[in-house]
Image: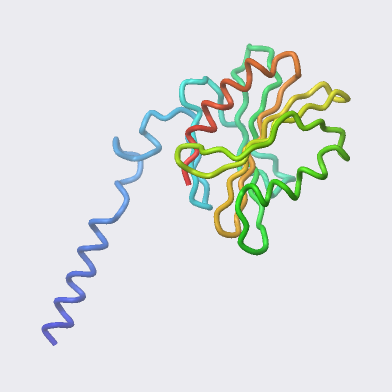
Length: 178
């Protein structure tokens, strides 16, 4: 009987030590000072850092979009960074997942400028740079895969503004942690 009490006592207090800080206190992520902090139920997080970009409401009609970052108001920019989550079947990595899409982009009017495996904060990812001359948009997609979840970060803006926009997008993308 005593050993059962000791085990229950140990389990109770060991869990308390692992508990999250009290919500909305100075050690909580919500009060941490990270601008545009987003934390997904899938276990990843990211933030806007010093970019000035803001979280925008996700569209109600698209269940795949986790969140959206917008360029600061008043800049006249149409820049967006969308965060999309998809379920995948089987165990594949980011480059294998990307290869499925690389064949489709030209059919949708996109020219692939670059596609390569990269490391983002020590995590394996795949970057695809695209341009659509028809819509005058340029995009950068960064793909992360973990288990059966694929996360696609898509930065987009007008072609003429993209070189400036992608700097802010890359700052946000570098905060991605899974």
